[in-house]
Amino acid sequence: MLDFILGPWSWWFSGIIISSVMFILLFFGKAFGVSSNLRTMCSIAGAGKRVPFFDFDWKSQVWNLVFLGGAIIGGFIAKHFLSNDDTVQISVNTIADLKKLGFQQPTGMQPMELFSFENIFSLKGFLILALGGFFVGFGARYAGGCTSGHAISGISNLQLPSLISVVGFFIGGLIMTHVIFPLLF
Image (cartoon, rainbow, N blue to C red; front, side, top):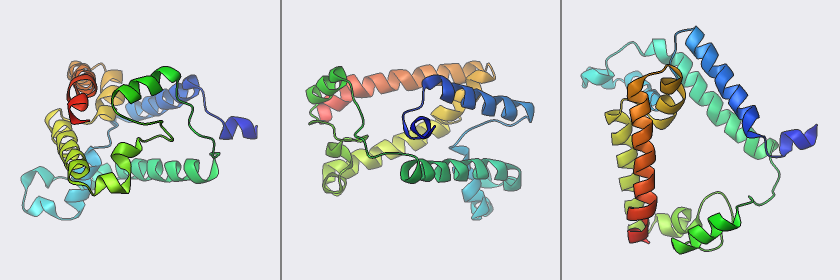
């Protein structure tokens, strides 16, 4: 039993959990999305007094903040209590592709060429993270939601704008990976 908890979980188990959560949310008339929590937190902080976009009844979104808090706490529990220290197994083809993009032998979930403290505090690393964060924030606002909201909640609600957004997210990811990223590294 402990091997099931500590070992990698199958894709179908996650699918069952995600679809169960979506069914419950749909049943209660709620829509899932993580980026909307930023609007709620800004509203709680009083930003609605200056910007009309943040002037709404944030108390109706407390459940979403609880969901976000649960995701953070769940990640902490999974990392510190339910995981072993085994190195992430990455396929040989992925390692070869990463080397073509300028990454050394991957040693974990995140490439050290991007996420080490030395690179974060370099001009190039700072600009990549700052501009990437800006584009993600702008894109989520422009698209009317984030990838999780559109891909999980919007598509399960059969919303055409969510399908179009998800297709756009994938096209943008492919362009970034195969066109822009090689120019940066």
